[in-house]
Amino acid sequence: MKKQYQSFSIIFLFMMILVLPKNSSAQIIDSLSVQNLNLDIPEKAVINNVFVIGNEKTRKNIILRELNIVTGITYDWDDLLTILSADQKKIFNLQLFNSVEITPLITGEEQIEILISVDERRYFIPSIIFELADRNFSEWWTNQNRSFKRVNYGARFYHNNVGGRNEKMRVSAQFGFTQAFDVLYSLPYIDRNQKHGLTTQLSYVTNKTISVRSANNEQVFFANEEEEVMRRLFSSSLRYSYRGNFYNFNYLTLGYTNVNINEDVLVQNPNYFLHDDTKLSYFTLSYEFKHDRRNYNSYPTNGALLNFGVTKYGLLSSDDFKDWEFTAIANRYLKFNDKFHFATGLTINTFLGKRQPFTSVRGVGYSPNFVRGFELNVIDGQQTIVHKNSFRFKLLDLQYDISNISPLDGFSTFPLRLYLSGNFDQGYVNDRNAIPENRRLTNSHLFGYGPGVDLVILYDIVLRFEYSINNYNEGNFFFNFKAPF
Image (cartoon, rainbow, N blue to C red; front, side):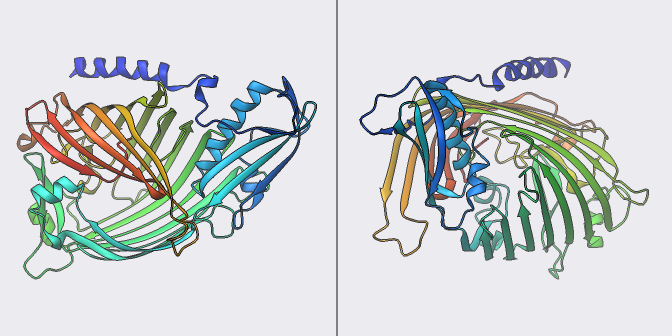
């Protein structure tokens, strides 16, 4: 086991060297148009004013918050273009706009104005819930025999810009395999300087069929004949956020979880909660730091992401679950040219305790940790290391004007990007308990590889089609609905 950890430690150190991108003109992702009044492009320029157009709902200060330029300051022209290109990415990553254009307007000798033009998305989006209840499509298709009893349905209402200040509101009512009711409201800034924010969330979930344990590295589900509710879960959280600069985010979250299970669950797994009771109740306090320099949040092709988190389970003496959990994520995206880029990501997750309630089990196979080729498996343990890699070629990059046929505002264009990918993942899960029925994949080096096709379309939707082979020579087609990392 030490050799496995040593090899992954070397990878992690290498990732840390790569993960912080250097400032250079190579980071410019989009060419900026420059308009002038028959004047030569200057070597230096002073910004007189910044104008924003197209923001019918979004408040101007939300857009200006992302700018790293100041009026009245003299900039070298090349440096200015690099700054504006980075600002263009930050505004787009607010996920409020279909497109963002920043144009320097040369109005005189070394005098310019900045024009920011945005095309707003549709912010209020009622949607129908029709989704699989399982961990991924392959789990449902293969292990669960494509059963439509394992489908969730209902309605979800999003408002991604409630008062024009980038507030997020979500209300969900879900039925089917998992019945869930969820309310979330996020206010990114509660102060005039736009650094402090708050998010609150309430959830209530019930299941008649639940996973009670894992065997042979697969989930084992249970439901009684009377189809009674097997589990009721209530959770609430309050998150405070602090954004000190453009790329650094700090989150402090206080949460409460209450889980009640049917007594038949303890018959199937006496260690489901570890304390021989049908109720599990505890508070949590977590801190997370995120450094995010990705060019596109939904499907990055350049930049880096660093994420570190620590969670304390059990704040009161009466809490039923007490433990510490640590998480570290380091992702790097290297863009070689407009066609080719390479993505690599390392995730480390560890609990200090030897055993956790089954509802808090971690490992490979649970979102977001997976190793290609093992999508059909769950590998449970207290320590997890996953290293993902994708070399991608952009085959198509199209954008269609659908304003003539779209009845809704915010759906005027339909983007379509298609990537071919070559993938290689590896991972390791340390199970301190060495459960015999799961020994095949725990405490051993796992890896998988294969080709894939990634499709990125409207509103940051990502569809992935992959064929992967693991180190046991097991190959299969896999379909996923989001970027791997």
